[in-house]
Length: 485
Image (cartoon, rainbow, N blue to C red; front, side, top):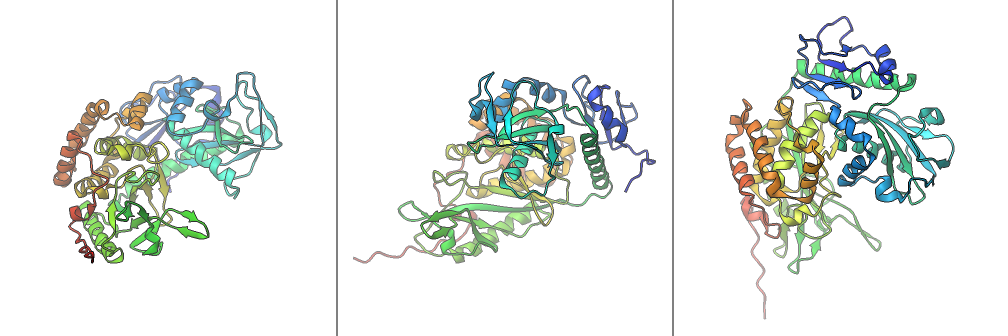
């Protein structure tokens, strides 16, 4: 653990002396100031407030452009809506002078991808929507261990809103009207800090600085894993629940839940191959898991399909597990821009329809064993070359995200293109991103896999979601049972 006496500057807080930040400066122990010292050689600059210039020489958190965007409520809400996040304008049906009873409302400070606590309104009543919502003085601190579903959902939506707006921290006001919807009422990227909020943000910033320090001083090889999904179809094209053949857990399991009368079915088949530090070895493990699946789903009447949404209503994921690295917004945004954006160009039209409900940018889930799964991608099982290239690209990005700083998805119009699936407009953007990748020193380690993926991406050759993908993976298919007359 570092002490304040150590003058190794990994993180610097850049501000412009605003009143809002003064209480934070009183308790913060990392280097801070209105100008970044010329000798700064750290990895991260955290900006606070809007009256400053962003630094380009290192990782810049809380960019001014994102802060200013939040000042325009219409633009802010439009961007949140693109991500599928509910706001007053999308679900509140409120006019300028309208007020609605919110049985539950919360104020949630967020830093990076974590809620710092939850403040709950002390009494129910009319929550006025003119000007800024009053701060935590009229709220009680209930912490993060509250088990109520509405609290957990409010926390989840608050973290998503901060990320979707291109921010790295903020104070989010969430309201739950009588309809039960969880609405984002306000996102403040430059909050006025009282003693409690200053303490929360200072503690979060210092823990983040320590985590960056430890990762930089003790790097470990990135470990990759995956849990791709696929569907089993009958000869008539109907979904056959994977739970009829396998248990939920194991190398080959099932997922998703459908209630049919008294019966609970899990329709999605899911592979859980052994993880590996090597992208090529992970691909081998996927093939081995498919061999096991062939033994479990041995009926000749079954047709295996993958992709994003091979059957309407059944969205499939190709989640990538990444561990031995810090989960934070710079890595997640690098994955969105340098992995999800290129792969969009090989997705089928069926796959594109799953958004924004599924395949949202920045979708992740922490794993209990450490690390996280990146959940934005569709099921790449539909094409082995895409799977192999995806593993290699994920590894390359996770190893080098600090050098991959281009963020086309910070432009709301590019984000909208992504969700609309406008491939031709995105192609030149992806071309520039790929040039960044090719300049990385370790690109050559995965040149074969990445070269094949690059060809598919720039030819925009999509996979066929209706095709049985087994033969592409060299998985033997059982002979059809002859029909007797």
